[in-house]
Length: 53
Image 1 (cartoon, rainbow, N blue to C red):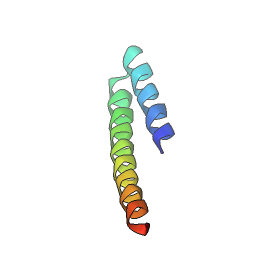
Image 2: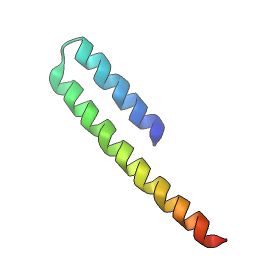
Image 3: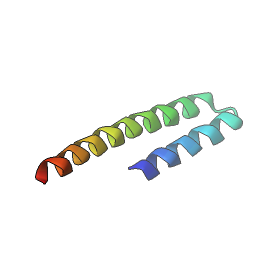
Image 4: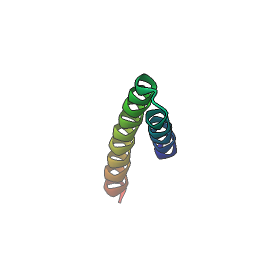
């Protein structure tokens, strides 16, 4: 999932460089959402791994 976040971030940067502001904003918001989902899933797996011991 973190790989998809980086891909959408790179798409947003490339679109911003070429002047496609709408596409850049959309790709950046998707990257932000995916990053926060990744963080939440990481914390959940970290907590569940600690509770199994």
